[in-house]
Each structure stands twice: as C-alpha cells, then as structure tokens.
Amino acid sequence: MVISTGCNTSDCIRAAAIDSFCQRYRTVIREDCVGDLDERPHRDNPRDVGRRHADITDLQTCVGYIEEWSRRNA
Image 1 (spheres, rainbow, N blue to C red):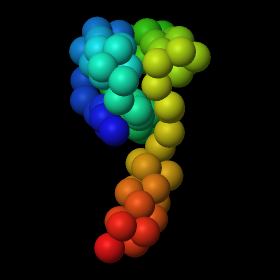
Image 2: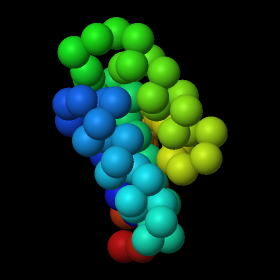
Image 3: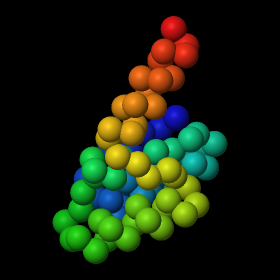
C-alpha cells in the first residue's frame, strides 16, 4: 500500500498515485494531508485520480485502517 501526502496535488501527488497504481500497489491519498497553490487543481485532481487510480480518504480513516490491520497481524 502507498499512502500519499504532501504538496502540489496537481503534480507530485497525482504522479505518485498513478505510478504506484501502475506498479499494482493499493494507493491511498489522504485528502486532508495534501495541498496545492491553487484551490481548483487541489479539488479537481484527487477527484479525478480517485476515479481510476487511488482511494481518497482522510487522516482519521487511514489511521483507523492501519491500526485495524496491525491488530489483525499481531
């Protein structure tokens, strides 16, 4: 699984999501942990990438998933 966070949703986050998807990883973008210089690409790119390449979620949901996975594999 690849969990993507950071800046430039329209460039780096989008490219990382597509690249990891192409390598057959489950890809997650934490929407509340990414940003961009302009609000419109920041809104549009996660929605577009989420249609095909990644799961879009928030920090709390992502942390809950990791904690549950950790309990099952302990």
